[in-house]
Image 1 (cartoon, rainbow, N blue to C red):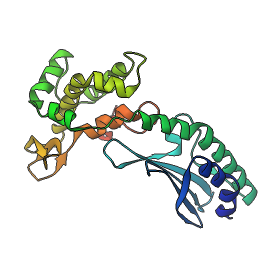
Image 2: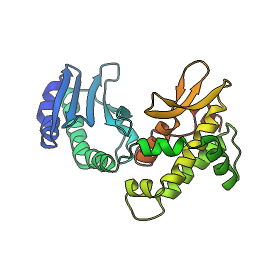
Image 3: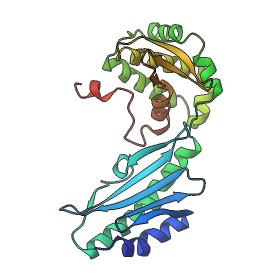
Image 4: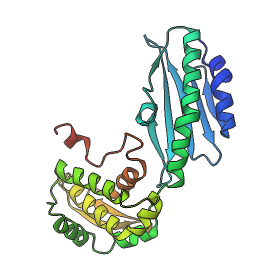
Length: 251
């Protein structure tokens, strides 16, 4: 069955109308990129029985790198794995996919990008000011431990959601207005993550550009990354959680 025919008939006009162009393609794979390469859409087919159509999004996040999402992680769209059996069925699925991308997925992703928070020097300078003490103050203020426990991560997730619901302002504005409190929460997040790996570690500048946690084996942990991804994408994209999977699977 031919993906190219279906893509050219239905998906390509939609993508071109949204100012996307083909970045890469093969018989079973199409990758589109927008101007500025801040968003990519990938459609591929898997021939394994039963054959199915799959869609991915790559979203350039606040760290300048791409976050990867499956189609069905966008909460506005249905299941991203579209099973088909014939060429006619494949074309119907591509036509449906094109409508969903045009009407639901791309408008959501554009809005997220416009309010995308980026960790800048101001964030790191605040974080570098006695992060252990900031974490301890946060824990005391909210009656929390600094243990590597699922309940602490879940509290942080709810705390972020409460800050975002504090008014009718856009997320980017709320983030900037509440930056000191947010940095306190990032420090606390870093401190409880440190408890997972039983190695010596210190908060340090990483090359003078980023501020994070360096372990005795030379590896780095940058807690701001997962924290800001959660801020940017939740609840619109069901992908990012602060609680590590090793904890969530037992709760």
